[in-house]
Length: 353
Image (cartoon, rainbow, N blue to C red):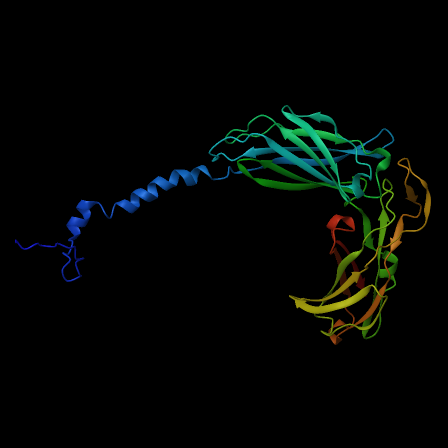
């Protein structure tokens, strides 16, 4: 009987396995394969990129009746795509969020709608806010801008005691990341938004120069706009007292007498000045005095329309170099909150001979 041969496969060991040369690898195309894989993935990634866009404009303004009093607000908004956009946007929705405390507890429907392609969709009233939704039907091509949406809210007698109204816009589209913007309107009846406020001249006039120190006193007063039935105003601000370092001893003030709302904070030197910082922080609100009959919007007006903070008194020591020299002191108050005066600082100065 002939001998049977059984063949079996034996995996080559590293010693038996023939080595591949660099030329053989290149001819087989092994090194080129990963490049082809990466190249085929790129188009899919590009297709998933979000189309860049932004708000082209937004505005908000009070409207006024024949009696000169505010009777509502008007607002506009528009969006645009980037010139580098890879496609067009369509089905853009726009939400406008207002605070009920600023436009009334019974928010009205928008009227006087303008802007071709824009339609009003719905109103959603929440606990503190109201959200209006608008739809833009036309597509917005590469580097193009939508038509400008315009509308009014006839607030009328439901206006509450707020001289500021704000709206927060958010735009959404299926091929883009949501974009947002906010804007505000303030009454033009005041120089700076909420109210006139200033250092009380009489209080600064009560400051005096002694032989070895300055006796200083600070108080801030607020005069409310005649148009607005503001009955309360948050007051939170810092005050810097700027003194000439050449004539003032560089120490903390002494004799600080203050009500519960004023606090001495710090002392620092900047250039040729010594600066003392005080803070006025009132957790509730400063209430003007007294109230009178209601205005045309049915809300009680403030008769006096002036309210004052408490006073803070303190002493700063004079150096010997101040003898016979006039000493000028500057006061600067800056709101921590955007009230009063819609975030604007006030200043005053006094020279002691």
